[in-house]
Image (cartoon, rainbow, N blue to C red; front, side, top):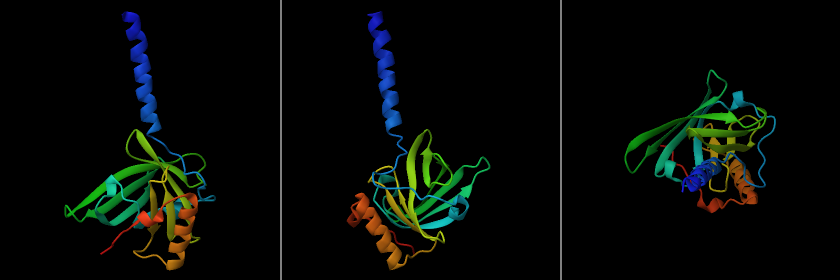
Length: 179
């Protein structure tokens, strides 16, 4: 009987560990490529969320912004804010982003609940760092960001076409209100 416990307990713990690690995916969707020659300093600052897919952490939220700043250890502070129009209250979530490999490639991982990390991939950005298309680690996560509350139609179409080619169903995007 003791021999069974010596096998079952370590195997069970190993399986739980693998499950936890597999839920911490920092990958990038197949067919997507993170921006090369990325300049993190130009990316810092306030961004308005223009569009996203609905998921539980941002459900029923408008006026959503993300502000990025450098931490003293070189990581990036992520400060997300939004207004829950059902509960009539502001929500804030502060996390941390780190580059997965090379700091010149916009392939990062972000955590709001350590030790769980998720992919954060800037896959398209304009030359002036005013508009960005961001993808998570799967086709469930997509954001269109802008330095202003609106986005030009040409940029909108460019981002939507890129997302569609990768496999996203852009008809399901929520277009965020800013008022």
